[in-house]
Length: 434
Ligand code: LLP
Image 1: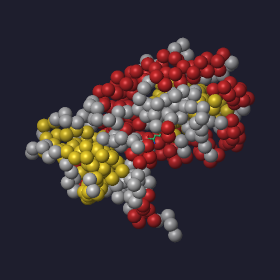
Image 2: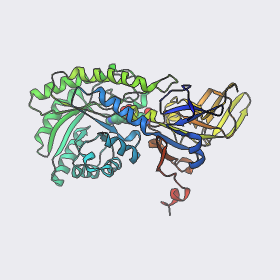
Image 3: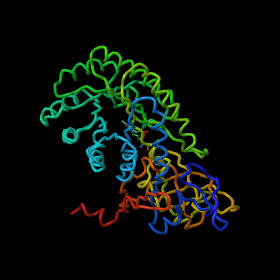
């Protein structure tokens, strides 16, 4: 058994082990170099243990209140991950007919714990969700409410609903993923809520069940969550006084993770989760409601890496580049949000010095980068790199830009590896075209 070191403990699931004087990055018990040799690169590699650990840590933080974690499928919609979380008791948050079908594949019971979010649900999607018997539709406008009432009448199934209210709180995060301000397209204004709930109560094909809120994503302070919840709790009390049966409060997702090179993210999670739980549960005191949460990133983010190989090293004047075989189509976050992802060599050779490089993909855009002026241990062509914290909004945001097949997805458990999604083929990519 190779000796374990704690050189990098971003997540206990990914760590270096010493083998013959070199330190090799492993996912659980499996060397990443072995996976690259067997399945090629780029490849997404997920750790079962990390996903399970994170789900449990969040779930346990809310133990003292009736609650359900409805994992947000958009973060990573791989069926095997959904099955894994379902087995641990997770419900789901979906935003499209496609995501709903994924949950249906996981099992009928999973549908009963599924909430349907999103500003633009279509009539077809509503029909499917009604027939599936989901837990709750989170409505985002009066027009949507009217359409849902119509579809429910047609399908002859009462639609359980909540309104997603816009609490107008500031949450510090990237502007593209902040959602809880008046100027954002999401939710209905707090000031309209009482009127909308009355209108919904008059519709005999709608059943008012709850209130939902979601203020954004990658939020690393718990304060805005607490503020939003305080406003929602106040609304819940008012609605209950008026005779609406508010049984569920859906607090959305959004708890951030640490993308920097801090140590021991996993240990921190229970602490963060406790503070998060405190912020959400506090305002609900005295309310007899079931809390729903829609975490995505906080569960799967640190549970995955994108494995890529250095194709070429080049120098343009003083500027050094490492061109790797993954690109912005595989992991869009750095290009789209200027997001920081820690990048580490799969094999650590000590004493080779460091240099600043741009780590870039082969796509024909200057925005195709994973890191700029990043201090890295000296790289060689052929080296493998792991882009960390890529389990959330990695593969789910991947595209076929530049006609690039999307990467293979691998799920590791102990010493075992499963291909949970095949690498796409070029033939497959063009099969839809005549
Ligand atoms: N619930 C709703 C209604 C949402 O809109 C989202 C995320 C979630 C839950 C899950 O949020 P989480 O716990 O994962 O933060 N592509 C961006 C993130 C977009 C988030 C969209 N909504 C990124 O890569 O940072």
